[in-house]
Length: 196
Image 1 (cartoon, one colour):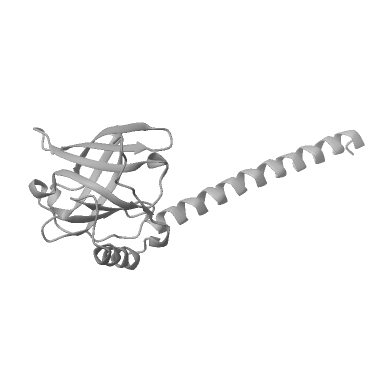
Image 2: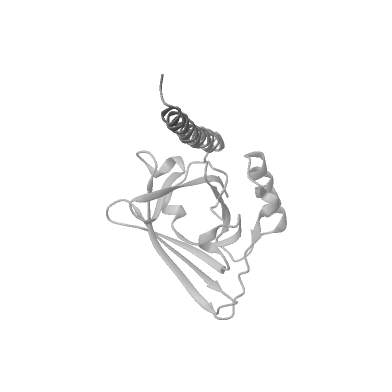
């Protein structure tokens, strides 16, 4: 027979290993659940075809879903310029009225496939990391654009002028809502900063 002390030590080891095993299993289960829910949020998102020559230039941000990298910014613009390598130079500018501070980010866009025409782009401000930039609606004369990504966490209403007619904004919101975006959370960007 095994001494009582040996049996006690054996039981403690089994219990300790069981607890460690349960922690590992719990971690694996939570990780698997997170991955499943993350994948599930990236439902297909239809885009419209774009002509890059017409799309380039300056766009004013009319509204956006709140995001951390534009926190506190108004008078936001995006400027797109074609580069010699076939990619697009992106310059985003905004103004923090409360801090009286100008903000600027310079990045690069490239087609998600072989060509820009599909309206699916990849944009990076921190290489080598790229995010999805999908043009999901576009004015006939490129007077407005609705841009989002498959996660539905990011959405922008852009225009060539500093404002859009209310009926156009409502139509774009309706389109975005039908595609699964939380339009009730939109922030309407001010475009009247004195120091911008």
